[in-house]
Amino acid sequence: MADAQTADTTQQVVDTTQQVTSQIPITSVSQKNPKRVAAGKAIAEKRRQAREEQNKKLAEANAVMAKEELRKAEVKARKAEAVVDPPVVMEAPVAAESTLTTTQWLSVASIIVFLAAIYYKREEIKGTIAKIKAPLAKAPAIANEPVLIAPKKKGIRSMD
Image (tube, rainbow, N blue to C red):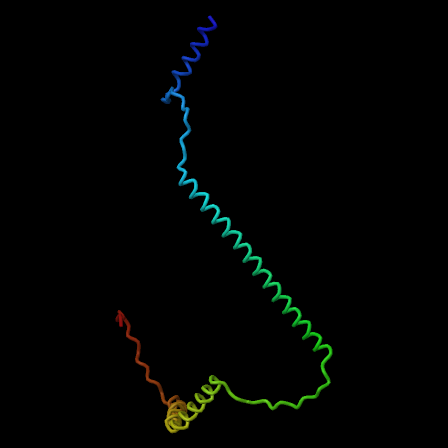
């Protein structure tokens, strides 16, 4: 009876699976292509060598940068010593040159041209200023005249 129950449970397990599987055991392991394996190993070796060379170059660059920083620090130290303990040698005063840059020359030229244009048009400017001042002088005379106001019309007004 125990054999019947185990047979039923195995039968029941087989029935519940819906995946089709082969009953033939796989005895041989598929062989890899030896050429492909050799190519993969060669590529891995090249990458390892490239990584090692890159690390060597990085170490060399770091050494160069450290030397440069050390040199800069030494230069700063020498300058600090020179400031603290200046030499006693007296130098002749250097005459300061007062040359203008191109931009400064252009600025000076534009100012000169602007002043020349004002000098050239001075008569026009005087005439314009006189015209502006003239109406202001006449304004009080007009204010004394009586202003005529039209009487308002009663009734419907126009839309104008």
